[in-house]
Length: 458
Image (cartoon, rainbow, N blue to C red; front, top):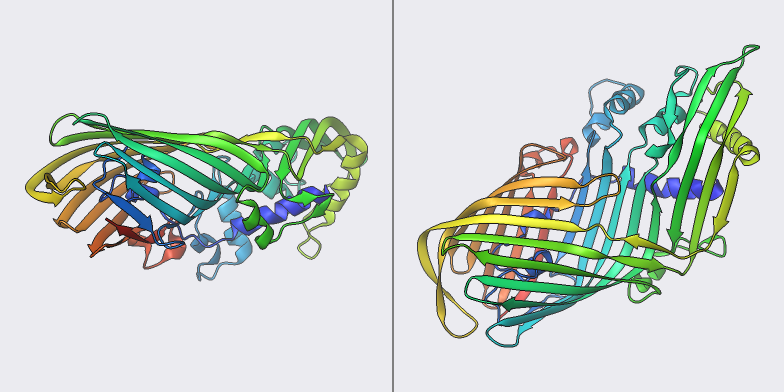
C-alpha cells in the first residue's frame, strides 16, 4: 500500500496540469513538411534532403481532458470549492480521462537516394500518460460511505498508463508508380519509465449491520500495478537526469513499426492512410509489480470524511486489508504495448495550378486549394479514441501554405485549428494552433494546442 500511495501521488500531478496542448492532426499531410513523414511514412514529398534544427524541429505537446475544465473548479462565481468539486464529480463518467503527450525531436534528417526513394531517420523523446478518473473511488474517499449504503463502488475504475521513452527510427518512402507512394518506418524504443494498471476488478459495498454498525463487503478484488524504472531495491529512484539518460538504450528495449501510403485516384483526388506505433517494450530492469486479490466481510463504523485528517480512512483501510487480503510483489519482467494510431484522409484538390520546383530539377504542377476529411484513432486501455477532421488547405504561393481545420472528437464538437508553413531561403518555419476560439479563456477549454518547428530543407 505504501507503494500505491506513491503511484497515486504521481498520478495526481497529471490531474492538475494546465490544459495546453498540440493536435497532430493539423500536421498530417500538410505542406510537405518533413514532420508529416512521422505521421505517414508514405506521404509524398519533393525534398532532396532535410535537416531539422536540433531540439527545435518538432516540439509537440498534447494535454486533453474530458468531463470538466479548469474553469469548472476555479471560476470566480461565488461558489465554494466544495460545491464546485461536487458538481464536477456528478458530471464525471467512468470513461472520462486526462491525457498528456509530449514529444521533442532531438534529431530529424533525411535524404533522397534517387528519384524513387527518400530515407529519413532521427530520434525523439516522448512522454505519454492517460489516467481515467476513478469516480467511485474519489467519491468514497471524499464523501465517505455512510451516505451510499448498498452501493457497490467499482474498483475496476483504477486504470492508468504512463510512459517515458526515447525512440530511434529509420524510415523510407518509395514512389511505386505515378499514382502510388508507399512508406515504412522501423522503431527502437528505450523505456525510462513505465507505470500501468488495468484489468482490475472487484467492488466495495456497505450495508446496515447489527448493533449500530455497518457491514462492509470487498468482493472478488484483483488489483495490479506494474512499474519499470520507478523503483530500485525498494527505493524510489526517479531523477530527471537519470530518466533522460535511460531514454537512449537504457535497458528496457522494444521494437515497433509504422506503415503508410498515398494513392491518387485521379489528378485531383487523393487517398492517404497510415498505421503508427505497432510495437511493444520488454520491461526487465528495475521492475516492481504489486498484486492484491481476495474477498472479505468486515463490521466497523462508517467513514465520514474529515478535511483536517484526510488520510484517516486510508490508514484504517490499509491495516484491515493487510490482514484480510492477499498481497504479493515481484520483480518479474513484463511487456507493455504502445498505443497504436490509425490515420486516413480523402482530399479533393482544385483551383489554379502552380508550378513547383522538384528534387530532380524539374517542375510539377499542383493545385492551390484542397478540401477533405481526416479520420484519426488511437488505441487506449479502455477503448479507442476517435476524431473526425474536416480541412481546407490553400497555397498562397510556392513557399507559403495554410490549413484550416474543424474537428469533432471526445472533447468538443467545434474545435477550429489553423496551420501555417513558409520557407525563407532554405529555412522552413511552421506552426499550428488548435481550438483558437478558446484562446480568449483557456480555462474553459478541454484542449488547446500550439506548435512551432524549424527545418533546413533542400
